[in-house]
Every structure is written in structure tokens, then in C-alpha cells.
Amino acid sequence: MPQPGSATTTLTIPNKTDSTAAIPAGKCYAAYPEKIDIKQQVLNRAQLPPVGIILAFSFIIVRILMQVKKETSNHTPRRRKQIFSSPDNSQAFKYTGDQLVFTTAEYHDILSKHSPYFRTITESDKEKFIGRARKFISQKIFYIHSSNSFKEMPVLVTASAIQLSFGLDKYLYPHFKYIHIYPEEFLRTHPELCFLQGNVSGNSIRLSWKHFLKGLQNNTDGQDVGLHEMAHALYYQTFVTETHVDKDFRNFFDDFNDDGNKVYLAEQAMEAGLYSKYAMQNFQEFWAESVEIFFEKPILLREKYPDLFEAMKNILNQDLS
Image (cartoon, rainbow, N blue to C red; front, side, top):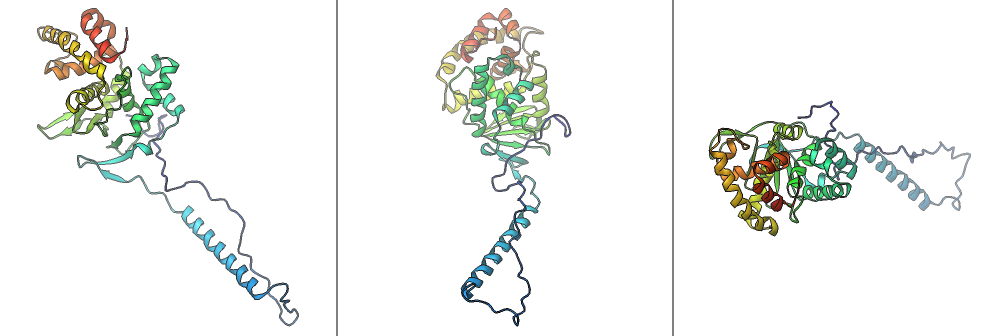
């Protein structure tokens, strides 16, 4: 996880109700009149009538009060980002989509540095990718369960979702409104007590930032927790909620079921195959790991299981060969 003081830029969230711009010094509107010897000078009513005196001094007083108010507010220290209780009752920093506004240059810089997938696509596809990422973020609420928040967090987690669905028409995963980012493994208490690197449940996607970064740093080992959890989320969105469904993804999934079952049985009979033992727990984990292997070991998948590789190409509408 990026550490303070590194080249990584700290996440800065604009606050619409608080301006950090310095207030210009401006002119001094409080001009005190010189002492007048009334024995030597007589006021001319035509030059300065009593009404004019009242208006002039009223104007001066109002401007003095306005200036004092501005100077006082300018020296009021900014409050730290408020800590909220997240939907699972843990404490976290909350960032809504309208707070996470980044420039195209910021997206491009972050993704070019950290996303191997983004670096390989064409310039026109990069523009499309950033547009989709911006829209995805605008519809989510991010909970950062750490004292350190970085702008890379929402951008790169979003990039995993966009990478998986880049060939599809439906890419927003609307059922999953909340995205939780933890510094390391996090504890799950139900249905059993265990530590997790990632999890999809309810309306939330949860990720360990430490393990998420490992997946980005080594993109050839077939292990990427970001893609893994997004694969679970995409399946749930399509076949459980049955809303915001990409029809081609749903229709081609039958091919994955057919070819995947054959590979699943073959891998179970092996001591050491292409898939991990974790993927052999059930067909859902097999699907999620198939996504990881498709993006990180496409050539090996095509050579070892060509029918499954073709099924993945059709399901995701992406050809990585």
C-alpha cells in the first residue's frame, strides 16, 4: 500500500462548502475623519446634508463588518474528513461519487502507471475506458477503512471492474453501490470467522488494498483479487438480481458452463493443474479464477483448454490472444 511521503499523491476530495482560496487584502474601507475644530469650520448643508452623513457612516460600518467576517472565516482551520459508520457498522472514511472528481490527465496518469491492461489498449479505447471509469465512480460510494487515503484507490479498483466488462454494453454493476477498501486482510464473522482478501456480499464489494496491489504488480501469475471479486459481482448482477443484464454475456455463459464443466472435472483429477486448489472448491470460484487466468495467462489457457478459451472470448467479447 502506498506510504505517506512517497510519489503517490494523497487523495484530495474537494469540499463544495469550504474554500481554501486566500481572501485578497483589498482596500481598507474604514476611513476615520480628521478631528474638526467646530469653532473654525462651519458645515455647509449643501455640501454634506445630515442624510448623507448617515448613509456614509452606515456604508462604512457595513463594509467593516463584512471584512471582519471574511478574515475570520479565512483563518478558521479546515476540519478533517469526517469518519462515518459504513453499512457493516465499521468506521471508515466515506467518499461519494460526486466528491471523487478527477481530471482526464489524472485518470490517464494513474492507469498508465499501474494498469498493465490499460497500457496495452489503443488511444481511442483508453478514452472510452476513462469515460466508463468516470461514470462508474459517480454512481458508487467508497469506504476507505484506513487513515491513509489515495486517489489511486477508487481509480484502480474501478479499473478492475471496467477491464472485466470492457467488451460488454452493461458495465456499471448497479446492484453494488458500496465499495470497501481495507489496508490488509479483513475479518468476516458470518457465516464463519475468517480473514479475507476480497468478498462480494449484499450490495458491497470488499477488497484488501495490499493484495489488490499485488495482483497489479504481478500480472502473469493468474492471481488478481480485483478481477476475481468483480467476476463474482458480474455473475451476481446477471444471474441473481437479473437487472442491468448484458444479454450477450448471459447468452454466451451457457458455453462456459459446458466447456468449463469439462475443464473443472479434468482439473480436479490433477495433482497440479492450471487452476489452484481454491478454484476447485465450487464452480463459482472456478468461474472467478477462469477470469483471472484469461487476462493473465491467455496463451497458456488457449493452448491447454482451447474450447474454454473461446468461450471466455465470447462471454467477455475480448480477444487477448
